[in-house]
Amino acid sequence: MKKILNIILFISLGIFLSSCEKDTGVDVPDGKLKVIESNILFEQEGGTGFIKIESEENISATTEQEWITISVSGKTVNVSVGANKNIGGRNGIITIKAGNEKVDMSVIQLSSVFYLENVDDYSLKFPFVGLTKEIPYKSSLPIVLTAQDTWVKAIVSNNGTIDITVDPSAGIVRSSKVTFAVTFADGSESKKEIIIKQEASYLDILGEWNFEYTNPSLTGRQTDIVTITEKTTDASVLLEDLPANSTKTVKGNVLLSYNTSNNNLLVNMGQLVATIDPYYIYLCARTSGGSLSYTNTIQMLGEFSNNNGTLTYTFKDNGTWSGQVVGGWGLYGYTTSPPSGSQVTYIRYMDIVMTKRQ
Image 1 (tube, rainbow, N blue to C red):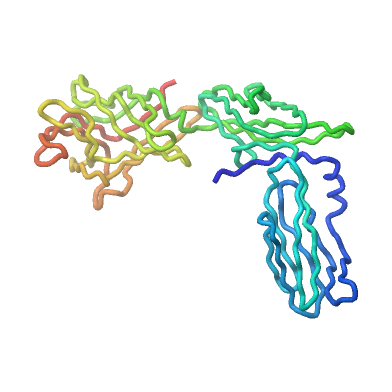
Image 2 (tube, one colour):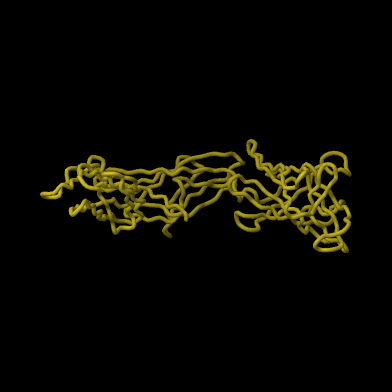
């Protein structure tokens, strides 16, 4: 479930909150159950509070409100509430019992006058290629947006969204912020900041790459141009235009898995890359010593790095071929599909490094 960022803008009751955090001395008339201290007035974003009880007997506590969570520890009722996403405050009752006595305590939570949907952790991430994100919001007051830097633009659109646009970056990680503000009738102002981060992401992986490698049959490092295109959003990409034979007249495709947390790529062997009659050209793992395998559980890891804006993948052994170290790929032809029997060599890629073309 996606988290919802609540940008808290309080009405005048919020001023009251800062000076009235505790209710004390609530008694049950002519009884032995007494509330000696409580803190159950909550701001919009929620939090934790307590009700401390004086009683000669054990206590219990109940509530019918799903948004209120309670637990009893000795003579203390612990209270927690989540963020109030409604444009309006809310209250609920906690009933505390000790023997034949009981007391009702009112839990109050202030309303939100503004919040954004589909935003996590008070921050937004943008790719190097730049992007506009349309963020739905709700507000009971007019809002003013201020961007810290010129490469970030923020507007309130007419279609019920806040639109934040980040300009392209030449592969340089950078951050900024957008300030959200409302002004109340008495002239007071409330503000909230959201952090803008620009860093490598899925969209930056798409495009042309220099595919550099060593071919044991040739002298020196070789370079071809390949293209990565979207296959399944945020899950996999397709490496296209990979030469499938030594003369580079036939091109093939290789499916790569994309890791959103670190931008790394994984490639599984055993993929059908192209066909050259009468052969089916398969992607095989190859060791530096010349051993090969088309087993599809064998992988190579494409490790991502960003050196001053130069995006690079360096392909390494991923520990999936027991007793062997994978040093690269081989494209080999088989007369059957799936592959079996002897193979014909078409092209070999060792010590692969890919660099994003600007």
